[in-house]
Image 1 (cartoon, rainbow, N blue to C red):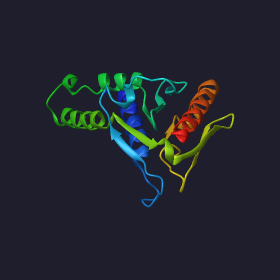
Image 2 (image 1 turned 180 degrees about the vertical axis):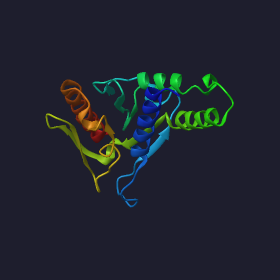
Image 3 (image 1 turned 90 degrees about the horizontal axis):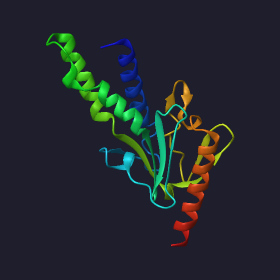
Length: 180
C-alpha cells in the first residue's frame, strides 16, 4: 500500500473513530451513528429548506435534512476512499496482502458512518466568524466537536458563507417545526 494511501486510510479511520467516541455515556443529548448506503443520508436529495455544506477542502459535509442534522465524509471523499480501498485491487497472497485486505475491508465498512442529531436536540447554532457552534438542549454533545481534520476542528472547516447559510437554514427549520 502506498504511503499516501495508508495516510488517507488512517485519517479516515481517525475521523470515524473520533465521531464514535463518547466522553460521557450518560449524555442527555442522544446522538445516533448511522451506517448509510450511497443513497441514504450522505446522498439524500435536498428538499425545500434542506442544506448540505462541504468543508473547504471537500473532505466532510454537514447537512440539515428534514428534522435531523448529520455530518460525515463527503460524497467526493467517500468515492475516493472507496476506490483506494477496493480490496479487489490488492495484489499478492502473502501476509502483508492479507493485512491490507483486512484494513481496507474495515475502513470500507465504516465509511458510511454519519453522526446524526435530531434538530429538536439543538437549541441553536451560530457562526462566530471562525466556526459553527452548537448550543444543545440538555448536556452538550461532543459528536462534532471532537472531530479534527488536518489538526483543525471540523466545525472550523467550512467557508464563512456556507457556515452562515447553514445557521440561517437551521434557524428557519426550527421556526417551521416549532409552529407545527
